[in-house]
Image (spheres, protein in one colour):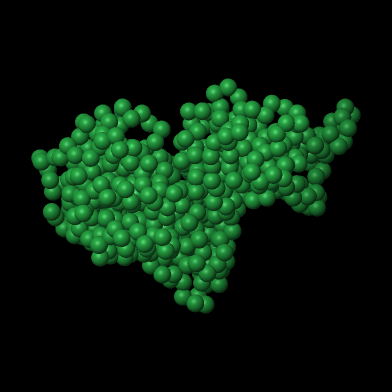
Length: 577
Ligand code: AMP
């Protein structure tokens, strides 16, 4: 094992190497563009490498996956040449999506050792999973229910497991997995290392910790850092948007805000490069700033921003450390920072010396918890904004055109063009002529926007607008029953279509739920296309959603326990359908 990096002037890698990680892992992280460990990683990795049990309070977005994955993968490094065919680590996660995501991350980090990481979740065929297990696995990432099925069928043994991670433990408990988790833990060796990550620590989590973790180290995100009375004067707005639409959302928000110099933060060097390219291709004068650049290169970038030769600088936290750019009006968190203090540092780049600044944050639906933590850290509310629609932007441009025309009218001096008006007036109505002139002026303000982007960008919004078809007769004046929809006596076909099943959701209009919330949550959380969702019917206290039969379980497991409009939702098959 090595503690030094050979990365020379690069401000990268050293951080990870100093945590005691294998050189090859450090290199893999550097290739992914990670510049330094996040606070959770810095605190969790050393005790995990020493095989302590650990209780980590961390939400999605803090870098917790790498925090538990890297020490597990390090064991592979130490074991080169002598590879087990039985799993030595098991990670339990609440949903199928997370199982896939965590397995992918572990696979990426563990590439130098050819780590075999197998995701196991409900809805996939047992045969396929059994073949995967039999081929030999290092790490299993699984939802509890399906692992338990394998244990009962004796198609999987956990006797060789040395480390168990319970990821998003509070979510797993909310989804009723407690008994499954207990049963799974009791199938693993007593000598195992147990790691529990949870965004919140309700008493039920403490009770699991007490029963299953041995003398655990306890880590949590640092306490708020904004010193009293010195909180920067920053207007903070967050936009919830699905990952695929973040770029388009940023484009629209920038268009609406018309910022001066702007600093856009990403997490990794690779993302900085990608976003710089994407913004440049959309016509923004954009420069990249990251730890892989020389001091001279960085200074050149900053000078360009300072002088107005560029509008946007896309940077990592490391590269932007200590920057003070006077012209800066906006800070954008394109990716959420991994801890409250880095949020405070980022937005503190504007709102200095009495100037008012604007902080814009883009986040994915599942990252909402971190936002609450940032609010506590800044002791200020972060408004949730609505990403402008194309119509909003158009209305704004028309307003700008109107104002510009008004200025021109007030300034007079129109004689040189009046002859054109007079000649047109012989043929056309004067107000039509004026409208045509406005149209030309308006069109001249048009930017090259991506025409294939949807009018409204999905946050909790539908990915495909044709996907939701609320029944007007049902959505209008909902039934009052609490336990099921009123049936019969109303027009329309009430049964789900061929190959579809109907799901009952325990929240409806009274909870502020709209059809697009349901479609957005289903497409976002269960990762299925909008066109696989059928009719949606909203009642006051519940909703009914039709989905393809073969996707029903996936939707139920992905959404159960999630929040829609602040309410924890429960789903089940609507049995009377
Ligand atoms: P997580 O909280 O595990 O869901 O991670 C959130 C995001 O942060 C993921 O996209 C990771 O790829 C990224 N990430 C994790 N650790 C780092 C790091 N040290 N530097 C930059 N990005 C990171």
